[in-house]
Amino acid sequence: MKEQDAHQAIPTDVEVFYRELREEFDHILDFWKRFSRDEEKGGFVGKMDQQGRYIPDAPKGSVLHSRILWTFSAAYKITGDPDHLAIATRAFDYICIHFNDLLDGGLYWTVDADGKPLDTHKQIYAQSFGIYGMSEYYRATVSEQALALAIEWYRLIERYGLDMFNKGYIDAFARDWSFLEDKRLSAKDDNAVKTMNTHLHILEAYANLYEIWPDPILLLRIKELLALFQEKILDKNSFHLHLFFDEQWTRKPGPISYGHDIEAGWLLHSCATTAGDEFWMDLTKSNAIRITEAAMEGLDEDGGLWYEWDAEANQLLKEKHWWPQAEALIGLCNAWQLSGNMKYRNAMLFNWQFIKRYIIDQENGEWFWGVNARHELMENQDKIGLWKCPYHNVRACVQLLKRLNPTF
Image (cartoon, rainbow, N blue to C red; front, top):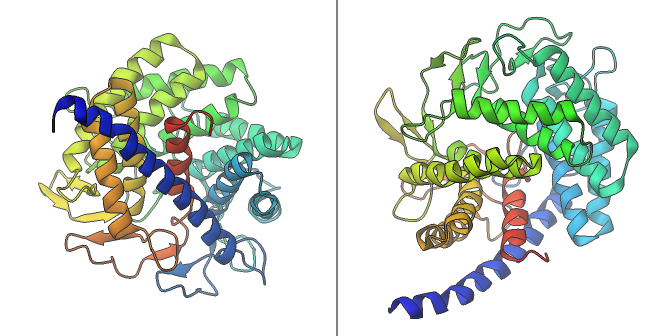
């Protein structure tokens, strides 16, 4: 195909992609509207397996509920659908009643199926998603209670989590905000004092809060977080991100996470744009392209993004999870729009073909957890769970629909 013909074909391909994304946006929301509500005990079910079976006594997670709150608040602003607002309000109410610790402050990690406190430790990651969800609910409803809670949880992070001497934030605390030995976010993570993942989502939450509450100290913290990514977290030789650190920011061994890399590439630039700082906007724009380029090492020939590279074992974890595919869509679109380089656009469209073929559950709705190297579904995974939420894929739809059509 001649170069001129190739450029003329771009709008058609992207228009098809846009229409399919718009349909998938509706399909994902419909799945959660139909299947996620716990009509017996309130809030949302703790667990559904890939066969659509509910696990009755499964614990309920604050991250799941906060991500549902964000998802349906964001959706309502777009659709105006009262059912979407009702689901957002259901999440808001359940968080306020069951996850919000009225004694010591902050959000519990989990409650049991009846809504009673279960794992009551204070993971900063969970507080961040609480801020993120409440900020979005305020944007949808102008709920002063939601704004007050978001500010309260921000101040708790600042009071207990902020390391004034070494900079950055400690990952986790006991219920009363005292020392906690095991700070791991999940069983697969290193028991590190500070992690890339937590800092990325503090930054995301702070940026969302800043858009509705432009506090000067909050803005300062956003810029400090951007500086930490530049100075401590980003490997400026490989442009991959280091994942685990001790209190003094000494790097600990860890894999290369292609999903987190490509997510950070676009998200850091987005947060810098929210801060309105020209220096950080310029630097994160340049970094976004280079981080995305590094993450593309994990793109397979079928268009899917591998999960991670185990640097110590010098081998690939041959799984393709749902959420790195969603982040790849945004990251590749962002790199294409920032650079004008068509290879990112082509990789984005190819990744979407992979998602349609292997990740979207075309029969029952939502996305499967992931597939292995033979494109077989990963076994014993969730459709709904502590980590399986509508956040990554709905956010990808929202981001891309707005990027491809600013009037959306």
